[in-house]
Image (cartoon, rainbow, N blue to C red; front, top):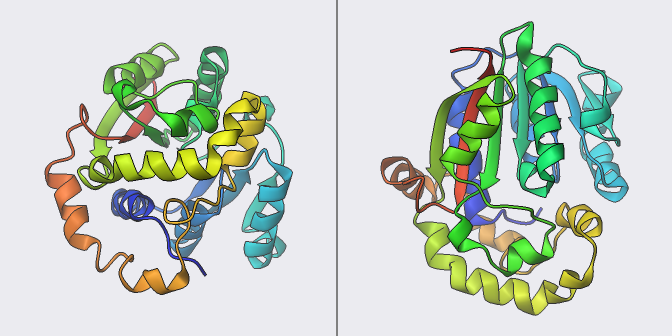
Length: 257
């Protein structure tokens, strides 16, 4: 298995740490991608559903989690989450999803998520790209509508009947230092995607293959893992200013606090 990118590792470490505060229950994840967050949830005793819009990505998820799907611990949906029936969940998770939604669809996404959490008083966890000033080639080729600020997240949460209870900047300063190299690699290997429609870009975003950006040879797992990255995890928690970070993590709940 290929090594994960450093930014992804840092995001997963923070997510895992925050997840430890919650009692395992029923979850729904939107835009499961390669399944890293799904894997963490299942390993912590959660069960639930995942949504993946792209058929090819969904098929890889079906292969990865075939045992959990067969035992009914996990339901895989290759469909539109916003159009699904409202259900009761303890946790709704989306990582690098909301930026792909138009303003109207973003509002519908938030309404659906908060409705799914209302009866159980559950938690919405979101991870999104941050900092409009950092807009670059990766946003242009991946089907993004926006990069987020804490103020935007607070506004979209409250305007749809929820409360923002926690927000944190992630991957600082690692992603900031690597940004010029990241932009170069993306422009060189994926620049042609700028010609695709936003829908096509969004589908492609779940199965990107940019060497030394989104994928690393398995040998790199010796230096890119949660043990070697732990000092940088401590650093992102200690520093991680929301105004300068390239990634924002947030938690929201339905209704008042």
